[in-house]
Image 1 (cartoon, rainbow, N blue to C red):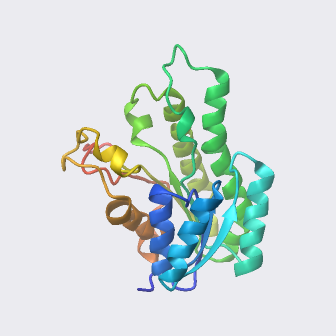
Image 2: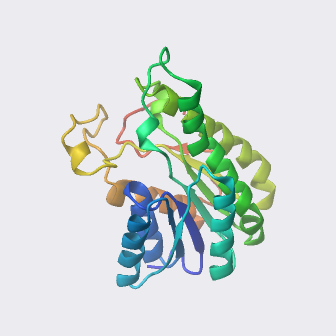
Image 3: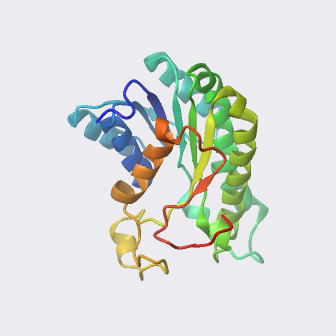
Length: 248
């Protein structure tokens, strides 16, 4: 399959879950993939899987809360592959996402913003010249339905992810002239595998969590492909019918 043949993709947060599934699918579709994550063991595992399957991948360790590390990661990818066509932002810190509004500290809120809208802003800024130069750039950010619905007790996570949606909409307006599309994905997914399998089924129409490999990564592939060239500023929710309304 060659839907991304000749493209260079950077996936921040590619070491596990949806990011891993996306990186592997992109490689299977012909892209050269930069597997970017904080944990070296996860990076090595994903790169190894891609190479065993016949794909091309470059492992890059990066803490996305550090601006200088983001810049160095993008420079490493450009040095290896010559540019960037597709940017995917999935990374976040799952250890700090829960807090009630009354108990939420500024420090915890800041960490969520550092790992989502601020980090995504930095990756987008670093990749922008290359996304523009390629003539058909793609940015896919991960927001969350938790922010849309105000899911408790995820106050800091919800606030940060709604910031991602605002960033995405604004960049879509500003970067449209450069033929760069910028979209959100808001999945309901079995991100943690067996752990999520032990949880009660979600209250969506299909009555199940989405599979990162089978249900979510293909949606990211669609947004990265030429099929989605006229779609920008949109929040696409592969959620099994979790929210069904005409207003979105």
